[in-house]
Image (tube, rainbow, N blue to C red; front, side, top):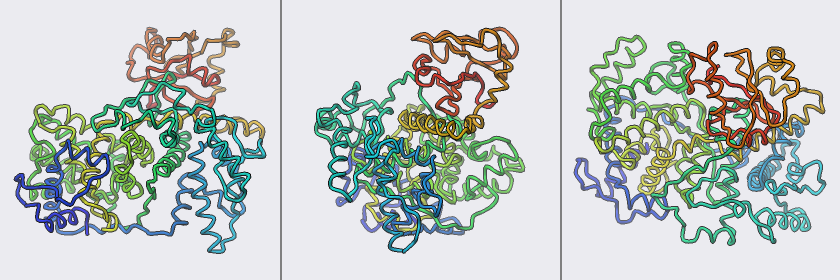
Length: 640
């Protein structure tokens, strides 16, 4: 049974829900909301909008002439799940026959934190046991060998940010040694923890220390006392991102090669966070089903974008999705009940069929589409995706965010989950959340507050029709409040969610540095960086002058190869920002610079210990230069 139908049936059986639009909907007396997110949500938000939206969805589906084929979620054994996890984390070669341990994997593993290593070890041991039971003769490395740096026979890492390998049960002596190291890393045994070394604010989202390490520190009494009685972590806490002097990194700011590393690290970090907090994290896998290979509604995002890119090259958001949003906004966002009041179901169905036939031909008459119809079509588009916008793999993980004990941890988990989404899903979700925020900005007129919008949109993103009933064997009412609260967080903190945590960027930098060292030993001179950056030899030939031969200490040379043949020497000062360099370059009245606007070009950090990174305006250049002194500095547009 579809989730929406199950919810309606549950409500009908309880006798607490009527099919009219009065105020008679009440939560059954037996409904339990013992999670912090759900309980606080009920205190501040009425679930009436949620159930009205469920009713509207049910009515719309009742008018459809055919039911969509349900997605079958595979139920692999635990070993297969963990093997799939290792594959997604980029560590499948640990179990490949005759491949051994590649240098790249060893470098990757050497940069993991204690809690990340524990997450990997847990999956390695599960897969190892499964393969042994199946008598598979794979070359399986011992977990102690996986995490033992070659330079240290005891497997201990001197850097406090990378404690020793996780414990094994093979040797009591090794367990005692590693327990001692674990205490050291957590700030016990007369050592301070990383959290105690930094200014602490209950409303700050700390991106410098791994989230799972923060959660582990909270379990320690010396750190947990700072959170006595929950601190300021309440429903209405306004969390913020402190300024980072080396610049905030957003999704899209890094080169694809570095984003691949970010994905693997984010998956491992999310799993480690769930492990530390005692919440089960398992990716779901959908069996392949037959889907439409053309059209608008019920078409996979990848197919839609392939169609759309033939019409508009380079587009990343489905054209129908963009058009529906613009249609809603053109009629003003001040309309009362926008998103909450549905269009007439029969008319919405008719418009849907007409759009399928005429949208790409350009003959559809948009004047016939009323604003509430467009809003209903937008929500219908989201619901009718063959796989949910939040993906089959991670939909349950998004739902389970509500089970994490603290709201700060819920935000941290959402941040990692957004990073893990496929690019098409992530881009579409971003446009949706930005639109929802614009609706909320007009709440004085349209009466659509953050809570109202979250309640209305949650059923459309979280109650996926195609999944079977096995995914909803939980309290439907607790789920309703919890997913609405997750939706609220996604809207309210969307800027935070598209930020790549600094600790992950630093891990990428370390991986790149270590890989470069190995490449130099093998005389493979920076092949990775050459693929991600401009042709350095070409730049050097263009820009080489007697003054360029030796750049003085504290001076960087900024290039803009697509705009000018002349590079600019910049003296670094304590307060010099990336925006200052771009402004200084644009102040030059020559060539193409005259036609450029500040918002069109950015300063990039290229090479050194990063592939390529677009800098935000508030990056302090001297601090970043100290972090990556071998980088090149290039001004260009994101499109170039």
